[in-house]
Length: 553
Image (tube, rainbow, N blue to C red):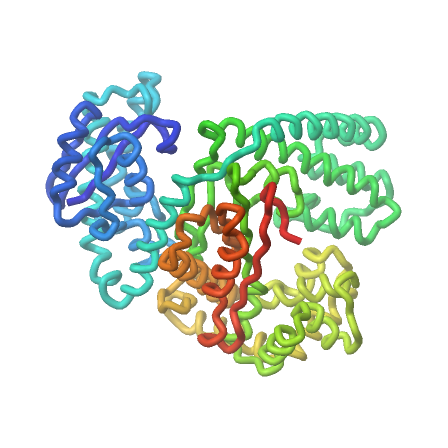
């Protein structure tokens, strides 16, 4: 039996449940909320269930349907199952069913949307006895049942390990979403006032002195920079002047006499984003001072986890106001645990490059930063972390993994091409196994069939034809996602799941009683660090954050 829900919106914490739907391969039933108890009773008796995005529906039912039993071990999920079968296809239930089962799967959705628009109904006000609504809703579990029948042979066969990992991850993620993070509302309100005041002063100056009335217009910003004596040197793919973060960093690095002007543009843009994209949303989305974000466990083509409502993976780690809006509950502290150069360690493992492996082993043995050591060996002299060549080395290193050329690496680093050239090619000379691996993967990707990367748990992660240069990065990102998810399962099995709050990129954020923090951190680092399964150790380092979620120094 398949189960689905309809709600007045996308948040189990803000929007009421409207319906519970049950179905099999041939029949679908839609139960309005007054009959939800009957639907729940039937579902609780079923020996097996399927859902599409089960963390969402499980939380809706847990919060709005008394008597619901969360039987995670008996519930399949067609969303991660579909991703494992083909990581490039659409994730939504009806679009995926239209691709996999029957193109008519989307027809009812269009009829529903047209009728809602004509009657000015929202998801909160559309009548539950209006046939296009309940028919649209009752179809969902039927489509889910068909998708499970389509995907089951793969995810219970050759990709069983990957699917079991995704199922465990969704269960743990649901608990993290329920727990949420506390937000500091007075701090946010005060910060918004300060940021707005700065933004107004910066825009008054830019408008009066440089003719820049909006910092979101590439043409306007670049015209102001041109008048100040900075020529246009970075362009977008469509031929417009680029004012991206990387482009502005490039101009600031190369026109130091205009550093204050460029920095004013940067901060004016950032101020608008801080208030509009982040702080205002924090105030709108919290529930009784707690943020219940949405964790998407494998919608990215690389299987990476992401967070929306609010989009926490886009938080600027160097801007303390944004992350600093989140505080531990009374008597608790945060613990932030990060992987140490995960992608480069994976690159060393996959490439087998002897120098890259040895440099990681030497850096770990000495306690030195890998990129400090790599920069010193590439340049043939001691390089300190404060030396700009340290950052150039990091940019050149990751450019090799991402498939970026010399010019793009220079723009990202904010330096001229000639300054990037020695370290870019110096990396290739010191670690020849990396470009050799890249070339081998590109050749294999172009040799026939659909190009794909293989993650460490055996799943295929497809890349688009013509983007074969992304296979190495996809392999590293996908394998990094597997490592992160395995870590979640291991921490949960060790009894630390109750402290997990978020995973972002290669970071775990935890919250625990302050008196337990040292022991929780020690156990977490010990559990996550892997010194046996890869050619170089996969190590993790953590910090206790006693007052706010700020960058761990």
